[in-house]
Length: 398
Length: 183
Image 1 (cartoon, one colour):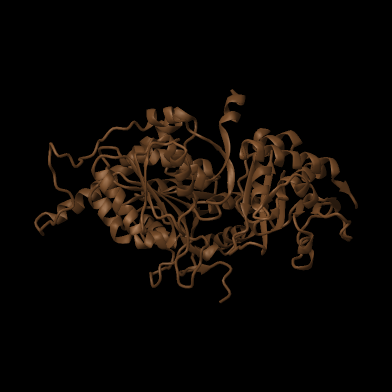
Image 2 (cartoon, each protein chain N blue to C red; image 1 turned 90 degrees about the vertical axis):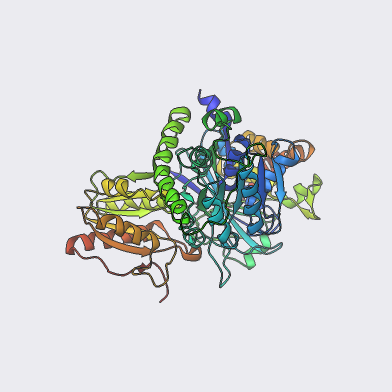
């Protein structure tokens, strides 16, 4: 058994881990912009296509706007589709993001999260995805190459679930994960297709049964279309939990929509996403050695936001810090995830002291010690019963 | 216990690939590893840095390597440009592509190997440049004993199937034989 597992484990970056997942899922159409800010995901998929290892139609287009438009067309025709981008590419796609979700197409896209210009930064933060959070896509943030691989596979099961029919983004930290090679147990095609069978569950363009999609809709119906998207997004939470549970049963690995680490007896906790969570966990162990009862909550599913789950997981914690890797300029508190966590707690009986930390902007290095300092600050807030009231900018030269 | 590595090279020399192959070799032994480049605006010939971690247990941490146990230098001219010893732990290992003792002072074990000579003797060139990353890995194995030469050779061969892989694997074997400790 151990030998068998060893055989299947490859040394892959998160980018390649995505490509191997797409290969296993027998995707029909891949459209992508082939130049920067594109990543190795599409490079590897092109190689698979050139070698005849996948049957997908590979369409290299002139922009990310066109990439998503092309997969919208293919998905509307009933194809299983994939695209990938990052940073400015996701920004350029912006208007089409709404069209994909409004047409209720089960498109899956991977994002190596990166900062936005200006000034130009090719490095990591979550500005690109935070910019797209209200576009009606289901959004995951993953924290290892293995999880990225597994989540792309789960994404198709969620997107194609008849109660959902929404596009899904799988986001992972640019460079910190996209270019970091880690061990990955690759899911074989046969198993991936048993888990997420290829079946057109969504309405599609069919000459024998003509339908119109995404047409002009007057004020007496547009609202209902949007309300259906709201309902589909609520269903997506259940679908994501189901997809994760079944994945665990089949492959022995599952992650939850949110993951707790040492939360059972924690007095203070940090909410993080993506690769930050790994370093925060190491810091929690360190903080406990220094007398701070620290824990970590990693938010894996960001849209739909699992608010009840988060409130429940933190029900015994006195102070909660939210680490944001993006800035919502001019917001009441500038951490975008912070505001959502605050909203979740406001409607609950449990009201821990809350603090917003902004860190890792444009990939400014954040070390274990930085997280330990955040835990210590939270301990002070817990003692005084008062949070800082505004975002703390970790490591900035102000 | 996590072993941490830092590779110094010049853009195009394959420092990033060396880190990746080392980690791939560790995975072959059922261990865990992580390899990542330093994320700069690299270009051919400019100093570049890559990192690796190897452990018997899954590696959680995703921060930059600050205090490496092993530093690998693919080009000795880098000594004049960057402080390759920065953060190297006491008792740490330095592996240098060099014909001569670089004369390093400090509490380190220093190994040298003429990786450039080995690469040229095997005709390993890409765009005119000698490929030194595979040979230096043989010296790293000798200096640290962390992964076996067989795992490195298998990883190289699976990375470049055919003649290319054979020549690169041979380079690693030769470097393993020829690497010497000078301090």
